[in-house]
Length: 345
Image 1 (cartoon, rainbow, N blue to C red):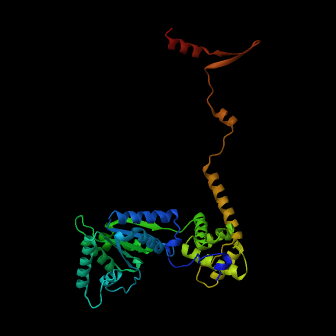
Image 2 (image 1 turned 90 degrees about the vertical axis):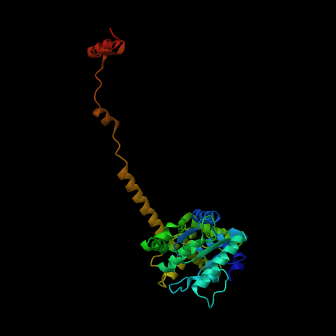
């Protein structure tokens, strides 16, 4: 709808995971590198966790693209509490027949599939998204599934992806055997203010648009009203483009972002606080005051030089004699005697 108005090839802030729009912040680049290292170096079990909307699924899609044809990848993405038979979902992930078969049959056929892939020189990776929805019993089944690896023959690698709750689940005592097998644990966090601005500009450029459409103060408010979560950033920016198009505007300013944030909050689904430029200025002033107070508490008071000199012990090794020709420094008798003893006289 607004693409032609802003000269875009496509909608830059779609909520669909698309590796073409992946913004590799330092955090995302580190997580992707760690996962790729784990997979390419044949580590059996890896985990990535992150808050809702932080880009886990997009990152996994990019990982799958990077691995190439030497890997056979299966993805389970629709986990839930009533997950049912794990082996059926595993078979479905790799396009294997599963209907009308019990767990034993499915397991045996999956092992045969793994061995065939290994013999063909291919590595097999199973990715389980939204793993925080799995109960302890299913997670234990996944651990047992990795027992198919023996000696130097790693035929199956496992990657668990989930929200922060997954980390808490894995710390349970009954899952300690699974936790001990984790080789890499990567964590995705929200973007900071600078990364948020770079993220918005990156996606505009990737869609063929002008990144300068978003004013710098608008980018600040996008960060403060999204918390740096990419999915929320996308929603705010998408609405901003729609609002600007409807009003015939050519750029996105801070007032527009504040209006959108207020409209969202009125639905009762997005918190209860709107950040605008006035609140940001007040917050900045408060932080400066706190910083100044902290510095005043840690820096010792300056002592005047005159006071320091008063507190010093006087040097009694010499005296000052005034003569018509000027000042003359005279050593006191005790000091002269000490020097003679020191010179052996």
